[in-house]
Image (cartoon, rainbow, N blue to C red; front, side):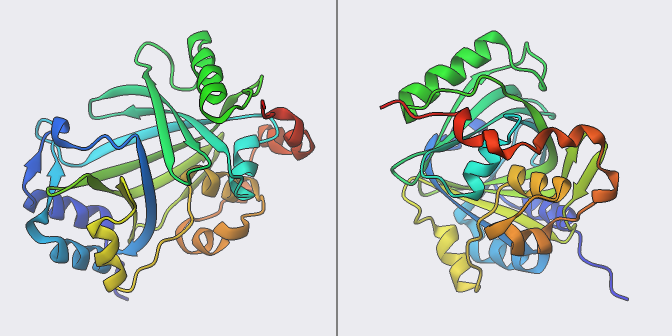
Length: 282
């Protein structure tokens, strides 16, 4: 039996051979178009070969591959999960993101609005715990949702899911685009966990107009974008909730461990409060 290739090892090898750039050379792209792909390790190797010297790799200190952990916040009725599942035009996602290999912790609010793109707003969060929202954090959420999406923030937001993974960031040396390459994803919810397949890479192409070189090369390799969210996949897998349009990705990419669910996970079983949790201000 042939062992499946380890995508994490492959990416470490790719990162070691690509010219490095510093953090100050990485385009921020706080307003951008995102396209996501799930590729096998051999396809990742083919993509790297096609990109050649047109891409560099982010290096901070001696590291080119970085560990991340994120905690996502939602309402008791899982408002943000259901907004994404229903593909609501105006929606948001709230998380803390900790850069375990340096870079501190941030509170990030990702918005999807009328323009069809993604806007990310964030504030430093080094002095607060990753699984809690401070008074200042809630003020940031309320002010941003009201000014950007004309939404009144939910009254209750609590930690729902954590994700751990490793990331390599490739940067287009000729333009405002970058490609994040994630491996080793593990979704955690209380005592439950759902790991991703070790031979797959989750790619996210981020560019100002959605027409990055990476997207063109992936099309040439026969790879098409997928609709995927780490948070939504994790919640659907660990709480046995309808995955709808994510189901093909969930079945291919993420393992389910429903036998490990705890009583506390009943927290999500009140979807009827969804409609009244977050309202629009005209």
